[in-house]
Image (cartoon, rainbow, N blue to C red; front, top):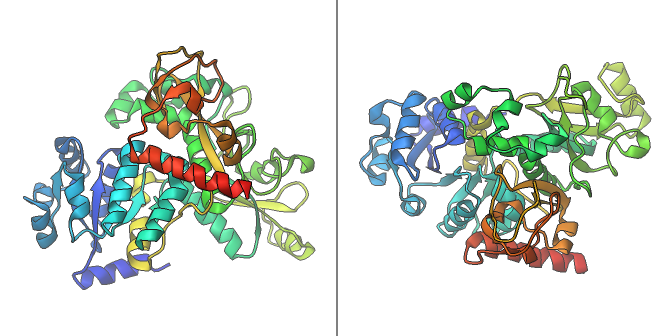
Length: 450
């Protein structure tokens, strides 16, 4: 509870946490807006494929020109200003940089950036949760081997949900389920970048004003991002994934204790200790009051009579039996909250979430009948969506993770609603992401066999 005080101490000592950021899109820009207010953090460099866009975004959120006009990384490190460029390798290699923030949103590039950072002795905060979903355990292992920290990004829901799970367990409660909210109808699964704003609740003009990427937001809508974030939560917290994918039961915040319990007790879970998402819409599409669409929750158990009596005495909302209750954070602020991760890693040496196991995976599932020769366009696109599966089933079925289902060619037809398998595609095997994924598969296949 004293991160801000510790940041102030670092600022007063003239020794801020020195950070390098790769990617200056929406998430990165949100953090840049807050970094101006955090004197204990110095962004030495920002690199982007288009440095001009990065500078434009920095100006948009209030940066003065001299603050991002350092002529080089050396100049930025010496002066306290920020260098903006396009050479990510130079940024990672620079000795002044302690932490790399990876927020490109490009799964293939993110893995390479993280592994290169580890090799250079840098901590990594990975905003690109899509990469964490399919190689998170591998990235965490590589970081440990290098003696550095790998962390999910606070502000994104997986880290926030994992924080709630940690809170519950540190209080001594047994966690029954965890997840977040979502706006969900089954037909959203077929949504494309052309239809996303109609479902999302924004006009095209509003989306353009916010410089919002329709493909990224479509991934939120079509179930891909919920699957990705659920996998990340499961692998950090040791929770299980539903065998047939997320259930998306309808409910508001106060409905969570009734919903997030086992079916045998009137809920929707296969068993205790799972992840799922709560939809803010009724099955006929009506908005549910006091929803948790933008937030996260943990459901925990009063497994003794004394605990249940305490729930009753303090008038907390429980399920209809008085046994289960939830704690929640109704809103998440995305990149505006990323300073928590920077401070936690830089000051305490602690990640804000890192995969400990491989419990859940995100398979690429077809949105329509696909033909041999078609090129998959990955997360949020026109061809596939992400489907959450237990990692054991995914490995057994040879499912291609959504993060590697981009710009690869089908070598045979695949009907609608089916997971893509390695036998269905011509995979690009010459990437760090592919090689690390195969390492993860080999390691956990052997673990399961043992």
